[in-house]
Amino acid sequence: MEDLAPLEQAVLTYLLSHPYVPHSHDDLITNSWSEVENTAGVSTEAVYQVARRIRLKIEPDPTQPMYLVTRRGGYQFFPEGRPDEAGENAR
Image (cartoon, rainbow, N blue to C red; front, side):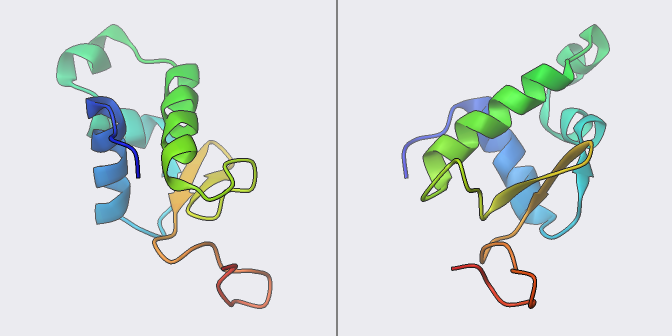
């Protein structure tokens, strides 16, 4: 795995400590960006770009994410890979 930038590391660390839970963009901003950046206002686009960069570094195929999955209004992290429709791992 390639080295993560500090913000990518902060987001991934937060997701790893709270797996399986859907996280809103606001939740990720509040728990991963610094307080100064929070008060200045971080856009949803900024969260999207960080998630995209993380996927490029951790996903076997970033176009078919199995770990960092998009959910309406945010993301969900599956350490073992996203379960398929039958409830089994997609690996």
